Every structure is written in C-alpha cells, then in structure tokens.
Length: 173
Image (cartoon, rainbow, N blue to C red):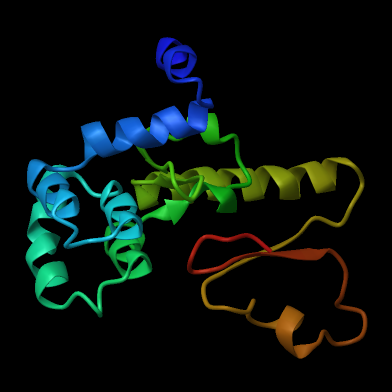
C-alpha cells in the first residue's frame, strides 16, 4: 500500500478504497459499474458483501434501480452485523470483522462473540464500581429502555447504584 501511495501521490485512504474496488467487487459488479448501470455509491456499497452475495443481489438492483440506493445495498450486507463503534471492550479482541472503507465503519460478523465481549465488559465495569466503594448497579438487557425501577421510579429506601443498559442492538447506555 505504501508503494502505491508513493507512486500515485495519493493518501492511504484513497489507495485502500481503489484497491477495494479491484479486489472486493465481483467481476459481474465491476462490469455493470463500468457500463454505468450502477453509480459509484452503489459500487462502494457492494464492497461490503462477499462476491457471491454481490452476485446474488445484483439482479434485484438492476431490475429495481430506483429502489436500491447505496444505503439500501449497504444495509443488505450489514444489517445482521454490529458496528464496532458500539463496543465498550477492546475491539482488538473481536475475531471476524468487515471493514466499510467508504464509511469508515468496522462491523463484527459474529453477534454471539460481540455480545459475550460486551457483556464481559459491562460486568467488569460494574465490578470496578463496586471495588471503588460504589453501590454496584444493575445490568438491564433487552428493549429500547431498561425495565423496572430505572424506567418507572424506585420506592423510597430501595434506590442506589446505577443501571447499565445493554439494548437489543448491543449498544450500552
């Protein structure tokens, strides 16, 4: 990459994006892009799928061009993935990732692995709070809002601590 950057006189991000077009796009998607049947944003979005996934989605994109904008294509490849920007753990611990070089997001491919690492990090934060003399707290999971006392109020004398909420999408609040 460094040699290509020097040769082209372009920044690393530019070189990586162009390499993504060359290495990540299926031959069929490259051909359709060269013919002008999809735009550059759609081609960028296609780089998120593997070549078989791209070739499977391409007929739908071509037959319903107005419906499949870049964001729709991107979502087709990433909706089942989890953005690493939601992680509260060291993201170097995650094994399988998919890079979106055009949106600068990285996705975890294994939801169970991400959930385990996120849960471990939440419990470590709770334990650290207890070790510092805090009252610990509650870890709530699921839904857009934490259940129980945090949402509805706590009876007098039963409060204290914090609620760490892990939403269905594995974001921590």
